[in-house]
Length: 320
Image 1: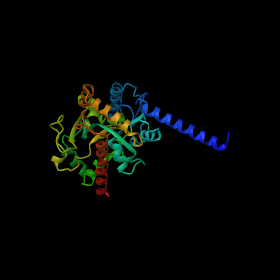
Image 2: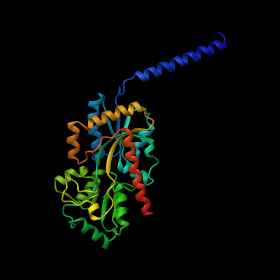
Image 3: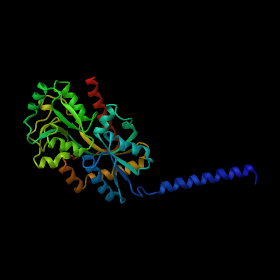
Image 4: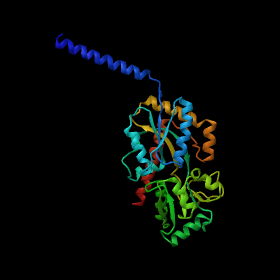
């Protein structure tokens, strides 16, 4: 056999192999095997609850298991690193939430919104400032007046530096109300710190502390929103008190690598949005005060998350 003929045959064989592989991939049903959900925070928090509930619902929607693993640390960035280093084939998804995006805007971590495709927005909730049941502060005005006279003395439990918790405290510090940020990486420790009165208040969305609210161990002083929260009608909104810090919602999403094929992103998005319309999800989000008011396409979700990051950058620019 001549070398020229051998080369032609080798090229033909390679072409046939590539064609066969392409056809196999095109014909493969997605998903055809388990899809890993990386929850980017530890057990017991809101991201964990959302990821585990969505896991059960997506399994019903798509017919394959969605096993959950918790990879916490670095404001959610540790878990997202696992997503970016995995094959972008739609078989590794993650929770991507507001405080992680806020940390990027603050210069923490090396990731950016463009590294991910936002599949869908699953939850959206304003945050509140809660105090322990026996706190001497009966109103938000009481707390602010004390902080003005005693700068830095009041300690607020937060989810970390660079998060919207931190941005909000910086906002009030810039107006003469200095509050000390006490970050906790583990949600359970954060909640316990305020319930046990080791910190004076906690910045949190209501769903994450729902058991403590039901037990009367925490009470809200202010909701950081334009309007009062329907579940806490007696609690004033920050805007009505004259504070323009109402546009940092605590949202949660499902995300994949930006390199994931568009058809797989759409398949996941359709399944997630279908899950959001199930009675089981509606009961869950209602109990945790986190029902998203809109259904987003992946493109709309991407725009929503990017706009949030830009808002955080805008706030930070005013503090420098």
